[in-house]
Amino acid sequence: MDAKQTAWATDRAPRARVLYCGFELNADGNQAARGLILNARHGIGLHELGKTLEAYMVPVEPWKGVKAEQAARAAAEDALWRAEQAGVLRKSHRGMTGAQVWKRVK
Image 1 (cartoon, helix red, strand yellow):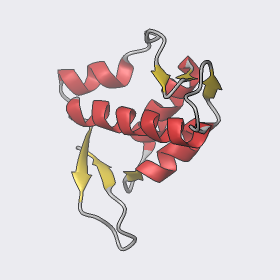
Image 2 (cartoon, one colour):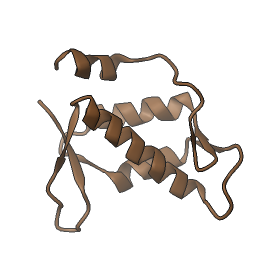
Image 3 (spheres, one colour):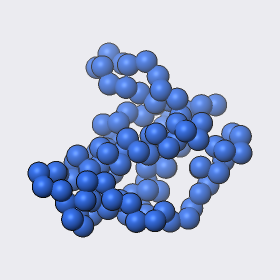
Image 4 (cartoon, rainbow, N blue to C red):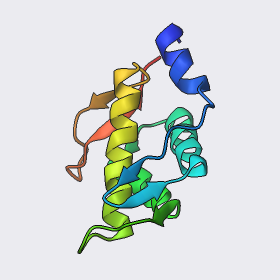
């Protein structure tokens, strides 16, 4: 890992309050997302990460018609994007199901 990847992987500082569609992702959820991304051997999908984060979504001021599942998907997209920007993940070809997969950079 280079310095940018190491900084992303070891950042334990709690992020400022982050809301996704009116749902807050708590610090445990943020760490769970990082752990899942770092421990993914064969790649990670948006659906898999979103399902994991759904349990960590706390309703604060939910947008009208938005469910925790949708907010968790937005949080998962953000986590994958941040990991990709840090050089930890890269997008891979779509699998047989048509879902985008992100794989760890070695």
